[in-house]
Image 1 (cartoon, rainbow, N blue to C red):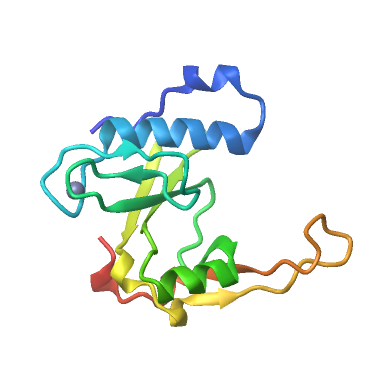
Image 2: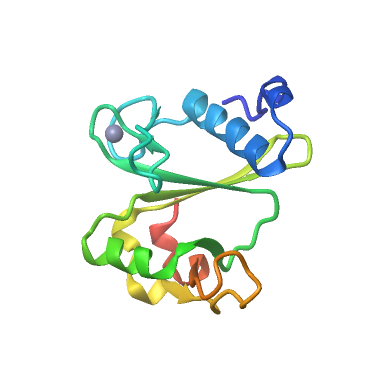
Amino acid sequence: MNLQCRIDLASKYKAGPQIARVLSEDWCSRELYCPACDSDRLTGSKPNNPAVDFQCAKCQQPFQLKSLRNWNPRKVVDAGYEAMLRAIRADRTPHLLLLQYSSTWLIQNLLLVPRMLFSKSIIEKRNPLGPDARRAGWIGCNILVGEIPPTGKS
Ligand SMILES: [Zn+2]
């Protein structure tokens, strides 16, 4: 497995988060295989579901990718709290891929959280955004990765 991201892809972009997204998605589409079946690759998903970044063309399992420079083994910040609870109730949460990269764009860590392990107990409600925020009152959530039993992580 080649752990180096293709830095040349970043030249078209200026914003840090966008560069991280482009490089890590490119790396995953080249190097990852499906953990749910014997397919040897994951493909970028259709843009109609913002929570899903990759899908297995063979078994159709959905994956969400989060790439981080700094690794917090206890929790990762996710999107809207209510949207997450709705997804859990409807059994629509994708598998979560947590990927950590270094300052030189080497992949350092990759953690899979299987979708069946998502439950309300690992979702932490964050404080609402303050009145000065563009989305004042909006409530995000953290995924408490540290609460997931070790056997569920691979
Ligand atoms: Zn598959």
